[in-house]
Image 1: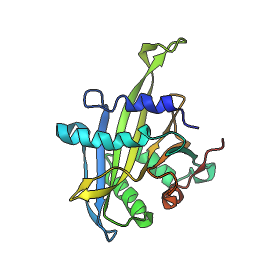
Image 2 (image 1 turned 90 degrees about the vertical axis):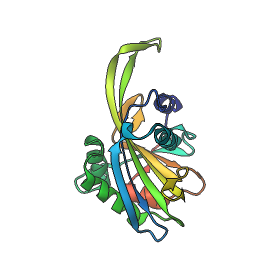
Image 3 (image 1 turned 30 degrees about the vertical axis):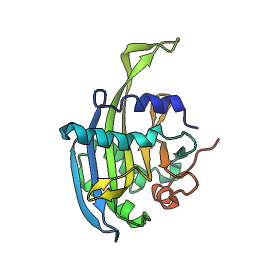
Length: 211
């Protein structure tokens, strides 16, 4: 199960003044499912209004209802091997989204499997969170306990020309479990918990977490 406090710890930092997002990459897909351009840039190079809009989209994933719209899934040991989605996600995260070849491969895999009735955008954010240690009384200490590097992917319908609307689905990887990175799990988001994009789960090669 996902701990709501873990997610709130991440989302509290998703403001213009507190964000530590390092990079944003993405691509656009037209209504016929064809590639329609991509971008890859330092997040802080975006204009202030654009950063505000993109932060709001990224925040939708971890701020959603935990264990309802946002659920934890496990990567079985059998899929944590070379050539699979898990290895691709690990490599994307490790390079901080800076490898365009890896990003293109990721977009291709999503586009081959994702079902959409209109054009959409695939947005990927990279963050590097210096997790502050906590004392036994839960008070924060100054020293860092761990640096949590993670990605948020948001798949958003286009509400205008290259203007992404609220995400329909997406994920946070690695999962953030007990205030620590958990690469064997992923938190998957669906805006409509009753109508999930099962093709996304199949593409990720994940299974529901055992409760």
